[in-house]
Length: 128
Image: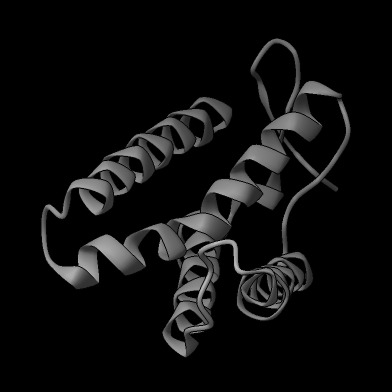
C-alpha cells in the first residue's frame, strides 16, 4: 500500500507539471488548464504528508478531520490571503469546489489506508 501511495504521488505530481506547462503554453481547454491543479492540490499534499510521516516512523492517517482542515487551509491561503498580495492569485469560488472534490477523491481512493500498518518488512498487520 505504501508503494501504491508513492506511485500515486508521483503520477499526480507528473500530471501537475503537465498541467502547469499546458497552462504556460495555452494547451488544452481552460477547464483543464485552470482547475486540474486545484483538484490535485489536496491529494498531493496529503499523500506527501503521509509519506513523510511514515519515513519518520510516525503514525498519520488523514481522516475526515485532516482532509477538511487541509481544504480549509488551502481555501484561506489561496483564495483569501494570497490574492491580496497580488502574487498572480485570483479569488475563484470554483477553486474552493476543486479543493473539496480533491479531498473527497483522496478520501475515496485511500479510504482503507488507515486500517493497515506497514512495518519495515512490508508485512501487513491490522491495527487494533
